[in-house]
Amino acid sequence: MTDSRPVLAVTMGDPAGIGPEIAVRALVSPEVRAASRSLIVGDARVLEQALRFCGLSAPLNLVAGPEALADRDGTIDVFHLDCADPAALRMGEVQPLGGEAAYASIRAAIDLAMAGRIDGIATTPINKESLKAAKIPFIGHTEMFAEHTGARDEMTMFTISGLKIFFLTRHMSLLQACQQITQDRVAKGIDKSEKALRQLGIARPHLAVAALNPHGGEDGLFGREELDAIKPAIAAARAQGMQVSGPVPADSVFHMARIGRYDAVLSLYHDQGHIAAKMMDFEKTVSVTLGLPILRTSVDHGTAFDIAGTGRASAVSMIEAIKVAAEYAIRGVKLGDPVAQAAE
Image (cartoon, rainbow, N blue to C red; front, side):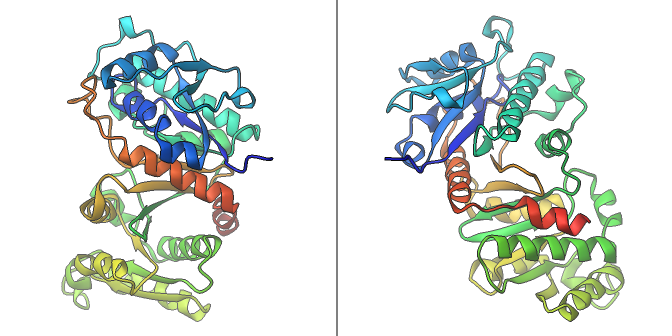
């Protein structure tokens, strides 16, 4: 019988952080085994060390590619990269080796996905300072994936407890994010979000756009962004037949979406949506990158250098990220197409 479980790659992440630990914990999880055929892309020596940190005894099966997976209970398949000698690694610290190894793992996984050899990627945490120390010319995962897949207009979506949150802006200062709130950018964000929701199977999605200013700006008393940019963009979307509400004050919009009033929220800046999601359920928040020609999900937490090497890191978010990737892969969800069309 044909095995319908998708083949997924899990990146090692920064080897000085908790990425290797949560990756090995996840791949011996019955939930992950039931949902996917997965392998870790990274240095087998680091993963052996992670197993020791976690008190696990699962054997590693080194494979030349996803076509050679053992796919056995209690065994972890590894696409080995000679990229991070544990003897040279300082656990829990920013260092060039951490950035270099994390990038090597990500690049190899992207190559496998672009070649059609795997169905998707679930990523573990990387550290921006380690990337900088290694002179890697990217600030984060999304920028790497965009560059190496040729994506032109990528966008982040969180999925958490049935709620979906889209992000209009990501890694920039709050001042820069506020300056990016233009009618054109908000309009494009609404369009991308609405099309992505349709791709996810919601026939007529109801999207809420978060307000930028307190109380939605109070008709210009607390800023004009709502009047000059957000409301006109919403009006234009409604004129095209989209079901869009807002701007809804940020102190209530996520709660209202969670109880079912909206299918999703368009968050205007990084922390606006991140804080809401992590307050709902820190461990089960999963990040999905839209606008790529390949499927990519991720945990939504950092490298946790303070507990790296202790074996205390929870793999709940990693397991959820793999399960979401498996679900989307099985359903054939193509989250790259709507964004690419919007960019055109």
